[in-house]
Length: 175
Image 1 (tube, rainbow, N blue to C red):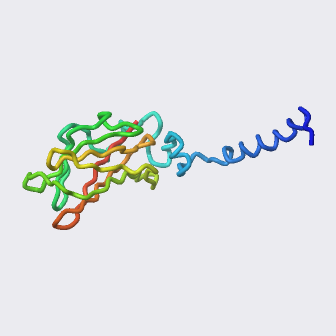
Image 2: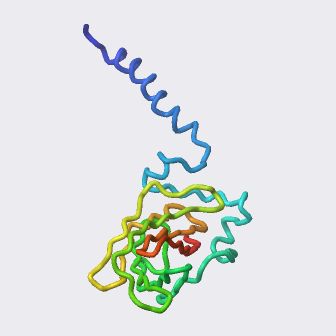
């Protein structure tokens, strides 16, 4: 079968329309496909009491980042050694934290996960953070902490120790 330029053009139109249909169906809510595609920015905060102009300045549920910021659970304390970038920003972040018992002794050999969630949106991130113990006793690197949207993120550490489990949460508003 021989195709002419006109026939190729006629075949290309339905293909182009079919390719655009999924894009037009997007309503701006975050979904796994959008989150994975370069971690799209969804700036509609009107349903959550935050406007585009206010940004993080009006957020009062977040922690103020600083090296030395610390949280304690029932068994474990975690203290920020560093964040890259600092303070945490939209996109991939690398955190280094020291984990100690409540007496301040480093806790090596912990098993843990870091789970980012946007409480106002009810979703997490499609990218799993990897927690790696460093050579310094009790020090762990967490990367990537993927905060792919602007707004409030809560990152919960679920920690398993020899004595049981514990949980800590840090909250940051990112722009």
